[in-house]
Amino acid sequence: MLATRIGQRFRPLRRQNLGCPPRALVQLHHRTLLTQSKYAGPLEPPLLLDTCHGYLSKIVSKHGDRTAVISSHQSIRLTYHELDAASTRLARGLANVGVKKGDRVTASLGNNAEFAILHYAVFKLGAILVPLNPAFTSAQVKNALNHLKSSHLIMSAETNLPFKPPRSNVDLLRDIIPGFEGRSKSGTGRVETEVAPSLQNVVIVDNSAGRIDSSTFRYFSSYKNVFEDGGSNPAPLNIEMSPDDICNIQFTSGTTAMPKAASLTHINILNNGKFIGDRMRLTETDVVVCPPPLFHCFGCVLGYSACMTHGSAIVFPSEAFDPMKALQSVQDERATALYGVPTMYIACLELLKHGKIERRGFERLRTGIAAGTTIPIELMKKLHRELNLVDLTICYGMTETSPVSLMTFPDDPIDKRTSSVGRLMPHTQAKIVDIHDRTKVLPIGEKGELATAGYCLQKYYWNDPIKTAEVMIKDEDGVRWMFTGDEAEMDSEGYVKITGRIKDLIIRGGENIHPLDIENCLFEHPSVAEVSVVGLPDEKYGEVVTAFVRPSEGSNISKEEVREWVRSNLARHLVPKFVFCIKDLEGGVLPKTASGKIQKFKLVEEGKKMVKEGK
Image 1 (tube, one colour):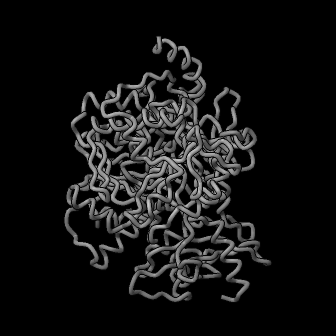
Image 2: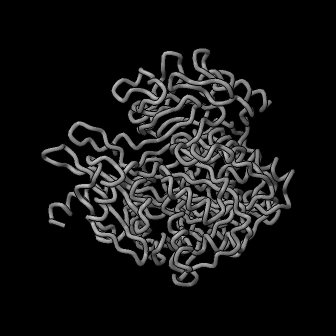
Image 3: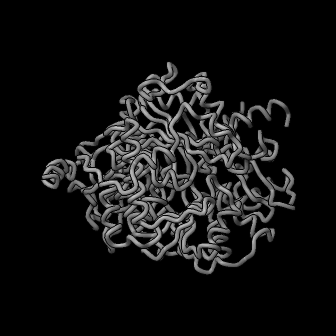
């Protein structure tokens, strides 16, 4: 019966939504050379028409005794059997505190075993998991709860952020539930607050190691008690749901604007993870160290879902990114893969460069994923050389596309792996269109806006039809396209090169300048550890090139040396007018999202202030 309903539900979607190209769209075969920047990815393997937890049960039947999750900082290891049983137990406990099918369960947690178990517990209930960035302020948490009408909040006692001491969440909870410390539970056991009227329950994961008195949270439920209340040997849940139900709402990372709530389905997450792992050639023998956060698509799909669909083990070195613990986990667990965004990899390489960690235990490393933003060529070469990541793959996508739509293969030519984001994933389409006319597909080699289509597209932005309609547009064939806002170009073999955010382009005297060209140039300087380039307003040229630079540890590089390096390697109009030291920024670091993306719009604001102050 269920299989029949699934088949009926997906028949129209296969033609319109799930990646099968209309007749006019080129499907790229081995000998095909493109002339227009538009094609469709392969139609094999077939899409998995299953739920995330439904597919987990299949993996358990094959690889149940293999390790699924390793939380190094907690000294916790779970096999697939144990993960499945623990998530069913937690699901039963969450049902007892009122979580129902369709409820939005908001979670503000770091990378830990509790969060890993929670994913499948929420899925098994037919509820919707809403991971929040633990760095969110109380105002952001309140906005998220109210925008989604979330009924349950699961939060750690302390928040851990990269390179910072633990931060108590007591003040944040006071803002959301004023006076909670003096309250006792109501007769219904429900949390009541006018600040977030939909909120029914708060569950606390006590990760404070005694730094916070546990009685502080007596008004709330504890994760430990909810888990134990689920019973020691709970029966499986049989809640009817469809693979195209929304199961995860991800807030976009906010590198250029206010976050939006992307609504992702089981079909989105399950298949994206499967295709990513396929392209990486993951197997049940792989051990993947995953520093990127589980609240972000990088951690939960590229990391967790890719591992779960292949029977691989995923390792969480720490709640928040710590380069030392990441490399130690690689050594201790004899890892075969290491994930990261460029800033994470740079931090790891710095430890090696300065002898702060032994150069041992990396011989089993072979693969990983670099994503989040364009990867400088010099960084790729260093990762091949220093960490043995010879099969490192590059992924491209966005939260709204589940997230990966393009990816390199481990055996792609080295120039393709260092200069492109690869080719299309299965059941996915891509085109590059004129920035000023989205109906015009550009010839091969011309820069324009990248758009993608297929099974991977989100359903919509939650409760925001206007923003949805701005970026998700049907063409004359009825195919719905996601317009990414990224400038890109495609070659005749279908490889796509991301040349920058359209909003990040620097227009100097009417000429388009791509920040990445200058960043790649500066990364080649031996004294430059980190760099980001933006455009600042200028009366004469409209915008001028501005570089924010962090020297390597123990090195110095003057502003004039930065300019001279660019002048000697690139055209004169690409030479930065302004050069600022990153240490002069607030906090002494580049402003980044929690997933490691540089927030260039904040750099522009900081640069304007510095120019005004004569710095």
